[in-house]
View 1 (cartoon, helix red, strand yellow):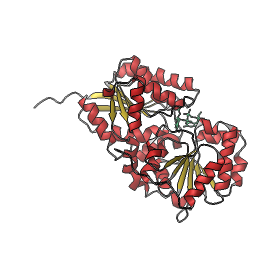
View 2: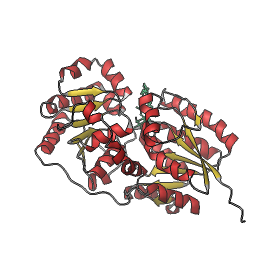
View 3: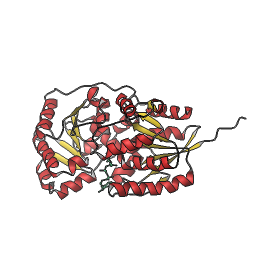
View 4: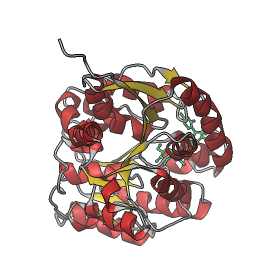
Length: 369
Ligand code: UD1
């Protein structure tokens, strides 16, 4: 009998909520491959039950093999804590490859440590650029991509951005979108969620809101403007608002809670798990958000998305999908919401390779290299 080729250790790194649905399809395929021995490392950047553990359960991800428990802190504290903890682990395990996803602090911290130990890096969701360096994620993306050996891009803009930063074209692989792999493989399961019933939304149109960007929720004037928009919109349609811990903290700090309480049709709820949130998105009339991933998910589900930002690192969702950038001006937010309610919602098409097979393509590239 021929000898089986030795499996290589790969560290798959996750830290924050949007990482979990990106790693899930990759980790699963690596686990069943002849070539890789994946080790799941959770930095602990997100640690609340509702920001982390529930996603492992909903996505069928195994418990992390290694948990670093770094928690919250300033950017430097969080990044530094991940680096110090990961360095020890990497020296011990000597992985053949380290795979990082997305653009959170854990992503960049892992890339920095890995490159200094001369271990190859794969970055999934490379090349996205908002061209706004006041976003912490933009710094994380640029640093991570500069250090990465395998750059897996989700849309054509990623290639242009990377080439213009001097990255060699043979390191760039257009594979599609792993977040959409997870979306498509969980939509049916999400239909079993009873969240619509729990929120008494079974036969009622509603809008869904998420907000967490520091540029929106850490700024009193901007948060105030967004609340003014909600006051107008809730007169026409109920709004469900699963609130990120950071935004709740700021609502309290700015003493905005009584104002939210006065909006009878705005329902503030705890953050939701993956399946409940998918079900809520799939049935919403439209979404108001400042998230990155939700712009992509709504495009695939053909749900109108109003993005409360002035830019997006995901231009394909505006050019081809259902996404509209509305900024933070309350008049614009209200007008665009009214357009949707009047039947003038933007329609779109699904971008190339957002077909549920991105993880498969990533594994093939890695196996062949
Ligand atoms: C992080 C990412 C952001 C991503 C978002 C998704 C960075 C720079 N930001 O932002 O790109 O879109 O996750 O949610 O990496 N907190 C809790 N419980 C938790 C986690 C956080 O209460 O489990 C609170 C803490 O008060 C913390 C604050 O939220 O200080 C912010 O958490 P942090 O991880 O620094 O950034 P996010 O705003 O979650």
